Image (cartoon, one colour):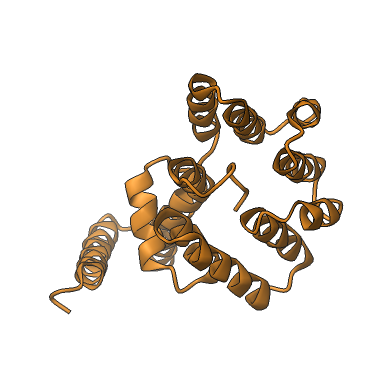
Length: 222
């Protein structure tokens, strides 16, 4: 246990939380606040502390190191394991992580998005065209269709499709992919930075990680 920083930090965090809860309870009781109100306040604060931080990391943070630490700690979850693999593992392990998600989660929307992600990693433009029409929103349909078109080398059509995408990070990611195929490294770096700037949480981590890899064409939604 001494050699596992996650366990040590976790125990320390819970001890501090417990001590803080006890101290706050005493203070509130001495302030003549009814016990039921003290209990409600403590429970609300406990939920805020225990749930608020993970939700912030997953959906709002742009701190790649903190997101990476969270993913490392929770990579037994298939979706977090996939994101962690994007940041650390070779392509075959990322593909394996995507296959695990598809075997684990049977919700239609998740199946559609991660099956499309798998087609991107497998460079299967035909499958991506077929899967794109089943995606949950117009932006997703257009984004993955443009990805398939880029795989086929048709940058003009990809640009036409990109113009109909409203989600900023998707639009900039596609512009980066188009610039990359055109050999414009300056535009590629600029659009990659803009794609990262318009994303948050685990999606931000995936975008940053994908643009740092040499085996990915463009970022894909988490």
